[in-house]
Amino acid sequence: MKKSLFTDTMIKRLKPEPSDYCRSEGNGFTVRVMPSGVKTWLYLYAFDGKRRKMNLGSYPDVTLETARTKFEDARRQVRNGVDPVSLKEQQKEDRLNADTISDLITEYIEKHAMPHKRGWKEDKRILEYDALPAWGKRKAADISKRDVVLLLEGIVKRGAPGSANNNFKIIRRMFSFAVQRDILKTSPCIGVSMPAPLIRKDRFLNEEEIKTFWTNLDTCHASNEVRRALRLILLTGQRPGEVIGMSSSEIDGNIWTIPASRAKNKREHRVYLTKTALELIGPLQVLDEQTKKVKPKGFIFPCPHSAKIQHIENTVPAQVIRRNMSVPVMFKGKPVFDRKGQPVTENLLGVSDFTPHDLRRTCATFLSKIGFMDEIIDAVLNHTKQGIIRTYNVNRYEKEIQQALESWERKLTAILSCSTSNVIPITRKAA
Image (cartoon, rainbow, N blue to C red; front, side, top):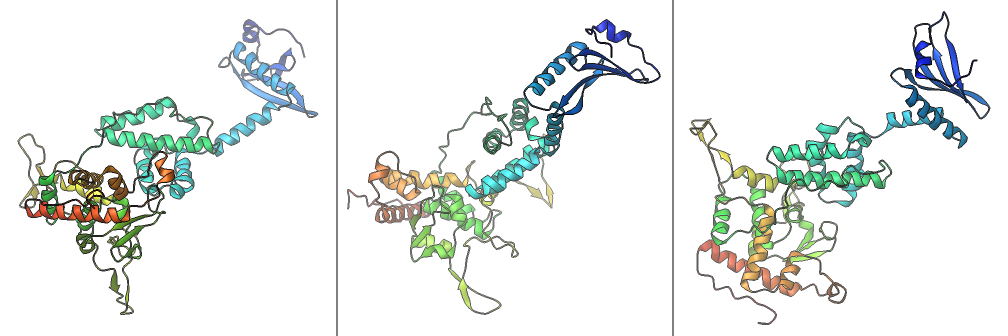
């Protein structure tokens, strides 16, 4: 085989012959010419006593300069004890078996979200609504920072900045999970900023709004379970998800014990149930239609589908609030439109935008207005103590929680009856 230093002119002048032939520059850097005229760059070498051949691409698509760079890289691998052909085959196989975004979402939900997050269903819903349709079939390793930015910008453009922020938080967490499990080397979310300004959450209902909300719940489009749950969130100040998941087994007399497994801070919490709270909860036992025996009720707010033995979904109360704030006005069974052709809607709750969590904030705000200290309010809300006090003060303030919730019930009753409030807070100082 004739050996000489390759030039671009030399390669261009190589003519096809009846059978294929090769020209080598030396050290295995070779060009093969086929009878069809196709010219292919090759690297011929020996590894572990076996002859090997590596395809470096076809000329002129792969230029002489590019082919020589590939050859030098492959030759360096051989000198370092790596077979470039086997490595390339392994990389190809790895590529075929690499996780798609659909695979990653499934693994993230099953191995991270479900074991560690009470709200894992919300993670699943968010990922399946935007990321899965956009990226589902693509390899997770192919998702770039630009892909993340464009996805989030699209969500903002459709008028959902809050959803864009929530998507980013969960997508970022999912890619961090992938890096931790060595599915990816780096996360495409590195360097990406929150897509929309964070809105400070300070919404709470004033007295007029509380009465309007409480009254209109009876006539809005909502199930009895959702109505009772929303009122109980306002009355107890507990987290919406913890109220929704309430079970008869957690209630003993006037005490509702939220187990650590259901509490956001993984800390068991005892809540005093006032008379109104117990009325909203209702009976803790029901008659079994089959055995005709009394049995524990189970979930206080059960899913309406009898085939599902579970509580209503955590997202349902928020969905009910949103839908009732913009209900289409109907006339003779048909929707009414304004002069601009837009559907006419009405707010059946009679209160401007709020969420179930704002009801919890309303409870806390009125406890403060009544006169209770932040320390007691934090105890009612089951907030984790901060700083050194967390180590040395282990008081659970159960008596104070009862006093606070009884005072709030009296205040709420006064608001609903439009009477002048004479609520006297029973603070530690007063006691």
